[in-house]
Image (cartoon, rainbow, N blue to C red):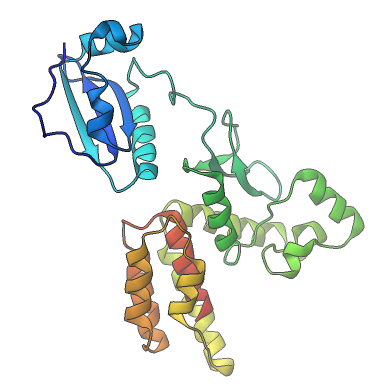
Length: 287
């Protein structure tokens, strides 16, 4: 049976904890807003525990934990560790169908991006999971400026194709208008591939393309933009606040080339989540 850790050694911070058996295998993963408070629940009279929990505590020989900054990160870490170790005492989250993902339907003629839950479908690429569906929608809203692929349902697409008129998203430059032939299939697939590459963390080619577009625009009539305003307006709530301050403060009075380099450095930061990267990409486009 697992022994209670020495008093005062368990932190009062958010995090994920892992119970291990005598062979070092992870048999249970959990999360907590307060690790000390949560773990103390396991070290009480086993008769007061749920039978499955009591069996897990009896099987475990050690417990470890990983501290994180907040409960959202604890939730995501728990999910990641459960999928990595497949602990036999975890029921919830193993193949959980309730977590939201950003999905791209690659099996359609003109793939669309959307929030998806439930069983994964063949022919669809999934990115995530995310803690909240609104985080996906906020991220996607940022990305559509750079990768204007459709987000509409098949029925909506077919309706506008029949009418010969695009929807509002085309007019606000968040869709390239495949339903009315404003973009051919080959060019549309390039946008889809670039979006998937960006979500996979491959940003170099995309930033290089935007640099070329901005250089061409600068030759034609100059450029304007405020890095501080752009980042503060576009960074989602879950994005790290220091990213905003550092990027805005470092690039505020710089020339376009320097601003691009500063933002590229932020884009390469492995600590940035997808939403923050999308916001930095949007800031580059605003130069």
